Length: 285
Image (cartoon, rainbow, N blue to C red):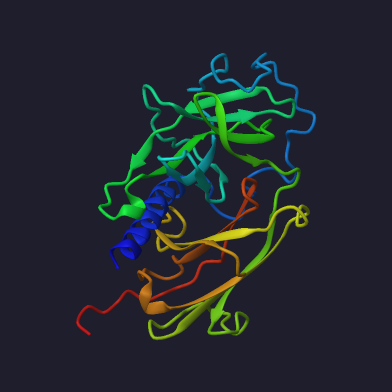
């Protein structure tokens, strides 16, 4: 029982860190989170002349960017094995703080294997008392993203532990609909009583579908998309979700919105729903 509870706490830590990044993201409205095709093709960067994937000579970037790479995972301290969750590229200038010293680092590599940038990694060490989790640590980082990146690695003392390949194409969310129950086309006014069920449904495509599968995150805003404090689902594969309106914070007319984020593991697209209304809960009832 304690083991299962702690597993849930792991996911909570990762989701909270993820939500903080999203809440500060500069993506508002129906916009592309990255370019329609990955722009590392044609990139020729003289940022680093390092050819052996070592981070010692690579630039430690501290400049202000508007694109953040969100990378999360679980590290086994006993054998240095890392299990990564799907990463995301988001428009944001909010980054996690770099530690002064660390054996772990995120490396961004170009097509030629040269290190474009490295970022020392700060880990959150588990304090669980159960045996299965005593050597576990969590990685949840937001770092500036270089558009010439073709591969992302996490290294320990220059030894690669895990990697993510940046595919050539960016996924695209084609549409997002919000409606009653199992029919997202029958509520043109988009006003949902608190006793109703809301279904949000989206369609997406990825030209790299033979190599990668898409996962999605679903967020909710009750201030018209200014902030996104509620993460409803994270890393799901289905293209729709139904929930009860009473589980959502209410607001004035037309201030509710859903946001869908699609990722193929790195490349990311973002799309917001049209605004709708969920009445403020009557505390007296």
